[in-house]
Length: 165
Image (cartoon, rainbow, N blue to C red; front, side, top):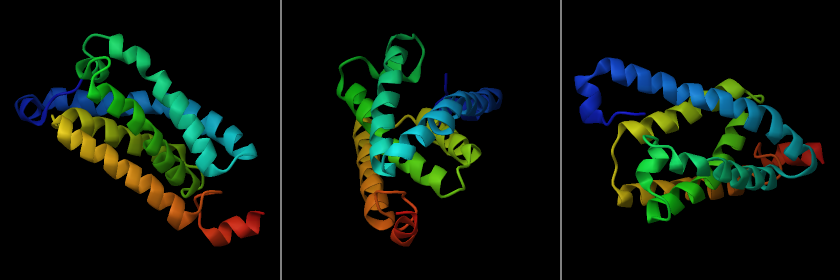
């Protein structure tokens, strides 16, 4: 599906295909996740609760890809530490995507592009399991930071939350 940076340098067309593919899938996913599901979850829950629920569902959504030969997920293997890191890492990523969505006037395009960038860089750079663990840790720190700085209710700042209560 993707090319490592070394392979990409020798095959620019493959790099272009990978970039397009890495954005096409998020386009389809985000129309459903952020464009439909998230608004409905946030209508009755805080942004944090909606993000956590959506993140867990989104994680389960990716499970079949672990059995699709040639997919990024299949390369991680089933039941491996990388498998668990991938599934767990989707949850804090969901928090970040919700923050982006809520702070760009509900722009699905912003989330699609960000999701595409995450996918593209994940496939472009052949990072070690240790680096991947650090990356997931940073997403967790980002999710905690978003919640502490912008508040759990809307992820748009505490003043914004008080005016919506």
